[in-house]
Length: 357
Ligand code: NAP
Ligand code: ZN
Ligand code: ZN
Image (cartoon, rainbow, N blue to C red):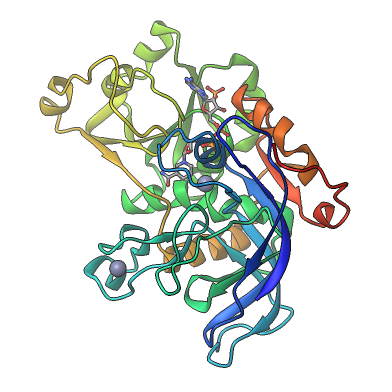
């Protein structure tokens, strides 16, 4: 076991602060990773604030991890010390159910193990995430970061990237597809870049007119202000696929008429009941679908990283120190981030010992 430094939340309302805990000694198939950067996902905020009702404290968030391999267990074959690697939202799954067999570890029928706020199925210990010095992860769940990618800009690919890549691939986006992304934040900006690189004609739905120039630079061909009924009416019947990244309850009915016949609206942001009530009529009369999607499997995550390496796709990041994480959460709540905070984990070594509240 090794004692390491981290930043943890101790309650839904307190500030995150310095926390020390033990990481397990590496098992034969484990990779020990020195964390260099960790992205800040809106899910970190949902988890810390217990929006999903399953928070366990202390909680060390962070599931957009990149770094360098420090050591490997004797059964590890694909990695060695010094390799550039990543870890996303998953650190274990049963590996034998139907979903795991298809490479859909995120949908493991026996329960996938998340990188933090979960229980390790092998030793029963709690999992702690990437706002920390090191992580120990089974080889199967470790990704190779292509040399072409800058490490800080690659970190958000491990969650924001794969969460938008997976539905784009699943719904067969290709040149000529009409794709729309709802919400220009961490996931949204990756959705624009990836859909654009796949050859789709890309539209952003946003509440924020001031994001228009950025959206075009990030890969949007069109911007629709979702609060403007005339703009919404102008794109009626257009989209094969809409990916909705908005984190909070919102009215999704207005997006359905903008789907083409047979099109799909995929929810990846908000989890919970829809208000106002969802009207199924417009689905039925045009064979439209309302769907959900969760991150992506491990092989697909590697495919996405390789795709980003080939196309030079990074996240647009604002690099912060771990000491700035509480302010970063406040800014994320105001949609004041362009377009992902990434923590430079060397700042943890210089931590001036702010303790958790
Ligand atoms: P983010 O960076 O905060 O971006 C969210 C964007 O949604 C904002 O920039 C804003 O864009 C829009 N928005 C925010 N609040 C809104 C509201 N009340 N009504 C309408 N629009 C709003 O968040 P993120 O990191 O991209 O995460 C987005 C959501 O996806 C979170 O709920 C997160 O938990 C979830 N998530 C899901 C998965 C999955 O596997 N399904 C994986 C990762 C994250 P505009 O200013 O352009 O409107
Ligand atoms: Zn995430
Ligand atoms: Zn499984």
